[in-house]
Length: 271
Image 1: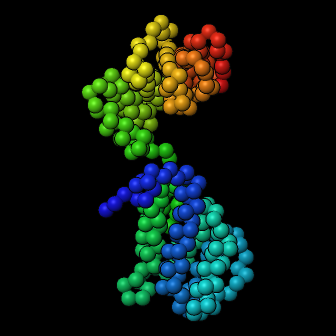
Image 2: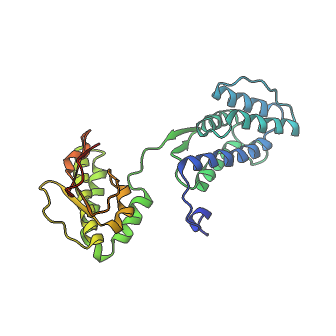
Image 3: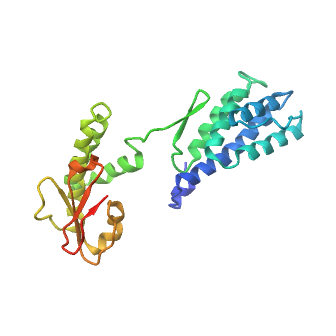
């Protein structure tokens, strides 16, 4: 099976855009499910449940037949629009209004909706931040071992030349996971990741760090590499000279973190 289009063409899709696309994709599938259950007063009952969830008036009586199906689709678009959260709320109402069990032959509309939502999640260009279970959406927490952030990094860090980066990086991940049970481990994770970052800086710049302040991590970045690395640092002002910052690991969980430049012409900064 080929990679998704956005992967093949290296297109980065922000989460807001992915959520907008989710709203439009699921709307098509909702209409397909509605077309399978439009007998009797089913569509009108479905619309009432959706409107009740969203706090909208039931201003349109859905009629039997094709015209009623068109009216349902128009009303859905009218009250949901492209609002991601309203769409999620509307889907919960739609689920509540669906008849349970097999409706026509072996067709189960509840199962069809579950499959539609799962399929739409799978089509999303990035994680839209919610999960679906038993007719309700819940907000997902940050995944500690995200595939792109962690697993891909571990793959290329497996190269022997990155050994000094890989060891503290793996320790940091382990401490991060342990932090869910022992919050003191989060501090250890920060220290480990600073060590990994410093080791990577040595490899990238080809220069060992000198005169490091005890208890601090120093990162020196040459002008040629600044555009790549400085945006990832807390302080991203460009400089025409080489730059260095010392950041005490213990400051990571304090409200104020002092970034001290190793360059004599650069000022102290507080964030």
